[in-house]
Length: 365
Image 1 (tube, rainbow, N blue to C red):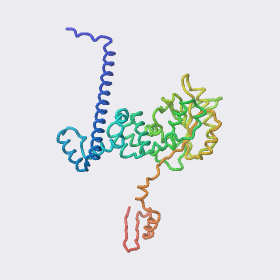
Image 2 (cartoon, rainbow, N blue to C red):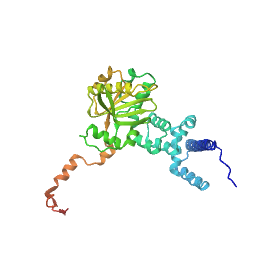
Image 3 (cartoon, helix red, strand yellow):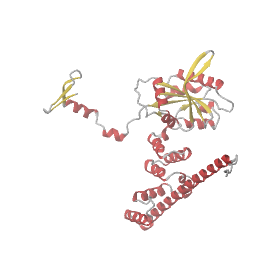
Image 4 (cartoon, rainbow, N blue to C red):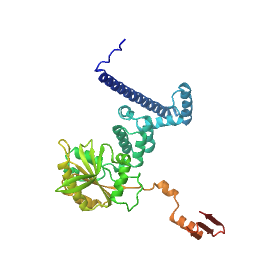
């Protein structure tokens, strides 16, 4: 018996059905998350209310945790620690409308992270909105907090206000950072532009994460021919939100005014040779080891192409906590004074150290 033939339009029907099922699954996940967040907020609010009105102490939360876990053994959200997070959640966001419309768009552990790590309300709202807008995972949210994105976003020196129309100028300005932190690289202070370029391309995923949402990498040492001469752009991107090409030039030294003139030339060439109908004006970003703010502002003032100037850092400054745990220069010098190095020879392969208290250390290698 001949098997029935599959209609020709069946693949299209199947693809459409799969898409609708996936969308329904996503909506269900979002809906479940929203209900969970609202439940946690209400529990936290009730705890706060009873503490204020009835004088509940910390012991009540311990008992509440035990009773809820006994009643709902399959639910893992009723630990003492999580109940305290719920309490902090309700105290941090007392407005139920904000919780329903904004906070409930994030997973619970994103919210816990923001509450515990960020004390400034404006800074916390910034990260909350960024996480919602860009769909950050918890690890990426943590990464952006660690790199202090709040204080770096939109801080580059630019001439966008007079070279781009509003609101594109505001969006472009907020896209740039200062400084950019490439803490995933291990380059020496003497590294040249090509060394930095090689390293960034080798770590393109981390580089794109630091650049931000919307940057699509098109090429390095991108060739342009102008007047029978060949020129090469360090890095060329297309920004999907700004709808424009972005040229990034890397400088392993401090910013110099002539850097802006050269980049201005590149932007004119890209606009004429690559830019298509519908693309916005090409933007240039100069990444320098360091800059003098006044010099950079003067250099960009009368340039008619949109350019931003930012510094980059290869390693981050030590936190105050880590600094406190490291020995001071005086402590290191004191330790060295107690050691008298007698012999150390790579030829003999031996090292002997005589300590002033009479003890010795000897090793062959």
